Length: 310
Ligand code: GLU
Image 1 (cartoon, rainbow, N blue to C red):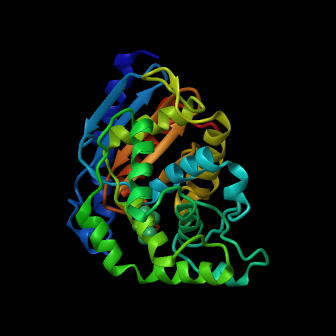
Image 2: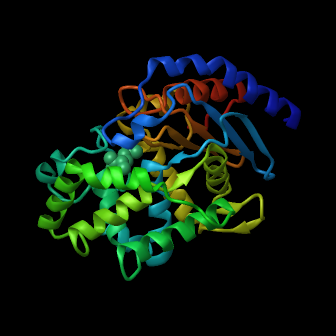
């Protein structure tokens, strides 16, 4: 594949997909997210040689939100091992909305189905090492910095404070987990760690870079060094396939066919085995919480570049 061809394809697909943003709406349940520009749209791609391609608002910053669940999983697996995580959280999809609480009470195992729904992610946040929520948040950000190949990864303080002030649903989930006996530490402290990780500020290029690391099974193609274990990368990608795109994961697997994770900040992280990472920013979301323009772009890129791995 010629480098020039890839840049042109990305730019054309960006132009062709932009209008799809009109089909979506920005998230408002975290009040600070409502300030996002619904027309913003950026695409980035990092290939297996470490070359970076960008189109549109690929350097616009936004909060990582649920995409942090993949990074938190990789982090806690790295620090504590796979058993520590999966003795408390399952590996199965739910088909329910990301913030659903219902199966915690009705399922026989009484543990969250997977680490990419809120219940599972809050359990993972509770496992992060550190002496306080702030310390845990700092250590997590340092890990994200290593994955992104840059220091100084920031947190959006306004979004963090806004979520912390309004998270009645996540508080309900966390208290339920506490009652089940699978949440480490104080409920409010664990939630604080979770809100900190969700408010990490990234751009589409950052997400493409993480996607590229995952596509190379944990090797950073830019710096040519291993940043996470191959097994960790594989676990993350498998869960992204089955659970990464909320209750649209099945349709996304059919239409696009690559591991991906989206967030209500408008980001999508996608990873194409041995070939590339793709990062998307488009805060106008469809009814399931996935970037409307981002989905359109990923469908088109998948067709044009023959990206399907499923
Ligand atoms: N911080 C958000 C929440 O827990 C993340 C949701 C998402 O991106 O899916 O509600």
